[in-house]
Image 1 (cartoon, helix red, strand yellow):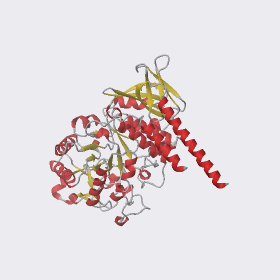
Image 2 (image 1 turned 30 degrees about the vertical axis):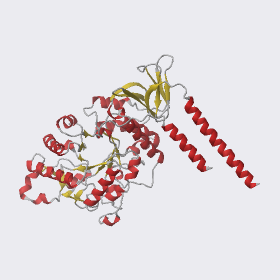
Image 3 (image 1 turned 30 degrees about the horizontal axis):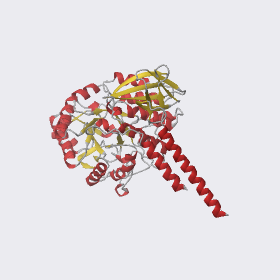
Image 4 (image 1 turned 120 degrees about the vertical axis):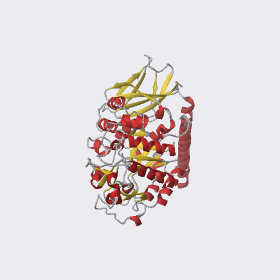
Length: 497
């Protein structure tokens, strides 16, 4: 009986899938098509215990055992939640306890705790076999205070004073003088080495807000001349203040936005905060196609933030992910957020990912929202505007070529609705997250109503009225199912007589 039920369920699911539009990807895949997953190698997954020479699980400042083989082991899981690009933390050879990758002693070697060059090659190959790209963090601003160049009198002018003391890893660093032509040439040689020795797909440049603009312009232009398709991402350490120059004057493809991250966390961490507040930050931002993220390794996790306000995990992450995956920019998910992972500070946020915990429904939502983003180009490339707001609920519109989609997010603790007047008559809005349907009312408007703390993404299509074909099919499947149950039950009773 279970086999028959499974077959009937599969048939009904296939039939439902046939009603979902299939929009082919247009052109070559670019950065706006990506969903990035940020990994700190040492704090992700231990795949090879034999290289755990300095691992001490009782000391959070020591290596914890994560390595490249551990990342390889999780590629299928990452693909399942829609990840298309993996961003690895700095993997070059570090001094003792340099688990984060910022205390580099040799820019040309893989840190032995993470594995070997062959392991990196295998990871890139396995990712490419799954259609995924791999980006590695490139540290240009800093080297370890124990780097051999520190004691070289001929390179005394390669280093300058470091004014920053936060984050904590700054303590054992030496700041490189990026205005020195020999330092720039050295770093360009390092970049070329990793590009030539591996099939890596890009660099995430660490702390671009701390680097001279002239250096970034020269470095990024040189890399793009070597490979125009090579991704160059910019990570912000302290401030967004020079985002406009970073975007306009360099060849960086995208830069992370701390302003938008703070706005999203502030709104979604508490119920009844107006979603339009995020839009207002975006509208005034110089960086309007940023790397979008809710979590980073140096602060309290988003899950920790909203759980302290007693918000539901699945509900809150669904709201935040819907905004991240349907608005301009490139979503970046921090390792463990899909579980979700808690952390009250940087140290807790950097724990090994507890893969034995988690919420399956949240992982399933990651899969659904990423599939929706991938299915519709308008959610990746379209113009973006706010349609209307009602208290904590907002409706947004994205338009690309001849297609429009509406994103409705209600962050309020009560139901709310918004009327849309700019849709032609005899159309309907079809929702993909909650299967909601909106038809024209007697005033010629389309009223989008959402229950408390919920979201929906709509396409516009002709009003099909009642779909008797689909209803008849579902009814037929149900009748067959009931009939099968009755038949098997009767048969079993006869056997027992």
